[in-house]
Amino acid sequence: MEMPYSRRSFIVGVLTCGSVTASATYLLSDPGSDITLRIGSGSDDSGGRKLLIDQWNAAHPEARATIDEFGSSTTDQRIELRDAARRHAVDIVNLDVIDVPAFAEEGLIAPLDTPLPYLSRALETCRWAGRDYAVPFNSDVGVLYRRTPAGQEPATGTPELRTFLGGAPPGALLMQLNPSNSASDEAFVVNVLELINSYDTYLFTPDGMPAQLPPVEAVGRWNTVFTLIRNALEAGRLVATATEQESTEAFTKGTAGFLRNWPTEWPELEAARRKQAPGDRLDLLKFPLPGGMLGGQNLAVVSGGPHQRQARALIDFLTSPESQKVLALHGFVPTHVRAYDGATGVTRLVPHLDVLRDAVEHSVLRPVHPGYRAFSAVIRKYAYEALFSPARPQVGLDFIDAMTRALS
Figure 1 (cartoon, rainbow, N blue to C red):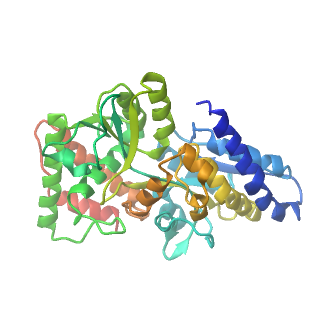
Figure 2: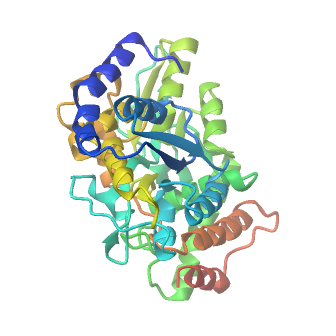
Figure 3: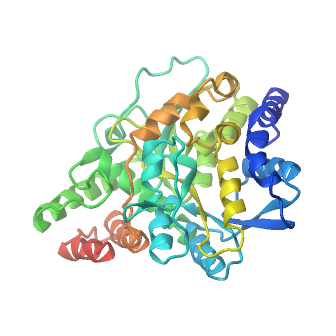
């Protein structure tokens, strides 16, 4: 999406005034031979990360950086990034927050010191076994969008997510609850977990692990919420799509008045509103407590790589306050605390910036554990059957046992 002139000018000003110069001194004082720093990452259609890399390269011709994109889904990315890290084909990996513990446990990423002030909730996803193994690059959190047609007064307050499971919600809510392939499996799991946490706060601990409830009680609680979600889908209070992009497209077409998605969808949603219905109002509302699930990406240095010092300097640049402000203008949630200080130019273009900070700090963690992917597969299997099987099955003790084994 083409940025307005004011936004483009502001980005250039931010980069020129701080981030590049501040991070350049260390490398330029001891340049050594020319090298290329390779970052393994998923794709980024916003252009924000590429812009930062371009600015780094302009200031660091002796240590140019490039982004190698891997995978079309979070599962494929994890597999391909693991292989690249093992072969030292990359110097830095940009990991989904759920994959840091597994990469640390396998010895693929090096321990790091993170003395700079980052959002505390984001930092929790960088730790395993008492050590930091990554630096938060950009955070993400499930949020609620509301569109109010021109001529109507927007509703006051924020409807609770659990409102859509029963009663009389203020409209229909689009959620990613119809997984069609591996690329949409994790979106489904995240949406299910958000609904679970919105209705029953006793099923998970604050660190995202399943609570140690008596198995029979846990089964009853899970089945209660699964039944409510299924009933809401059948009644049209929840409208299921497969992916975040499908949800965004359906929302812009007026399929529902509410949308559960990530903050990165804001630029596309706002551009569509301006083009299709400039009189409508678009609001980004954080979920009330318990909050949306925490997402995002963390940067880590590959263990045993040849350019450890330079790789860490690049990470410092990418996570500096100025770089984080640039990411905010492209729809990402900044992780550096100082990115929110004196951010007048940013908040003019991203008016919900403080809402996002609060939403991240009150978000819900997925289990921070090397077995998270196995846990996610268990949720996907049993939740899908409970929500969509014609037989309307209920989960049993085998479901609780499977979750326990995944995180053992």
